[in-house]
Image 1: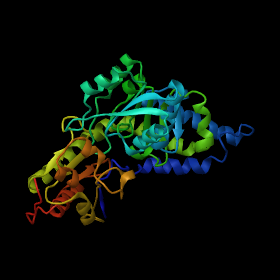
Image 2: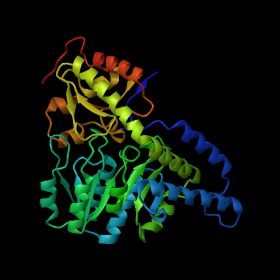
Image 3: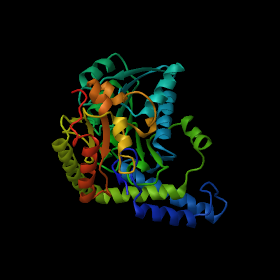
Image 4: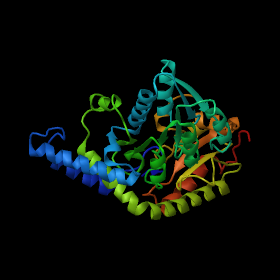
Length: 376
């Protein structure tokens, strides 16, 4: 069986969450909007309780917790609400390494003349250039977008510093916490941000559930059901269980995962000549490991590992899209590092034996046994 190490793209659903989702989906017959009968009220009650439980996990009030089909749709809704609040033509600052889905939303809005968009830079480790961001913000800003953790290199961003800067400038804030939720606590981030986005697919929860924590006002609030339909009460309940399990287990899980990641990194750095570990090794998600080999381009390595080890060369939504990683490019890394970059992430359901096998398979596929080298 293929060893799964692409947990930044999507995490396997926890069997407890899957079983609960199926059970509740069978038990609930009514539309939560059907207040005329008990079946509809039962579904509505489950949805309300789920909002409350997920809100507690994220640090948001129940009425500010919104279920959507994905994190991408939640990011879109947050941007639309910010535009509605600040008006067309608002000035937006966003990290150059934001998730492609948010960058696409921002670029489309800019192309339509609805926002004025500028991207703030990152350093060679992929962390935001805070002095440069401060300088840009002091010229006036209405909205700042930031990631709590990056989806490619796994950096944990100093998002609280960015939120404080935004507050001083009177700017709204969107925090993409898709990679952070379920891996570390977010209560302080949610308390300081206007919009925080989480994803069930990134925390061993239901795949098609995104969450937006924030005060969505009219007319944006009126877009939700016409655009996305009635919320799935069973999926929301499964998301609530995933949040509850994460609250109870993530501290233990993340310690174990970090040890496994460190072991995988040790195997690869020992066996692959010239291997480069990318990103901020002092501030990264417990399972995240992004490396480049001078011996082999990323797409060749991924192809060699088909059916053996699942890893990737970039964001899942960019899979198959030609061109280099926008994250590694923004970091200003050498051409061979960009071309050879692959991301891995150890997850909740990986074990030590898998990591030993994966390390051996990946290092062999990188040409460690052949001494193959391109340029370093």
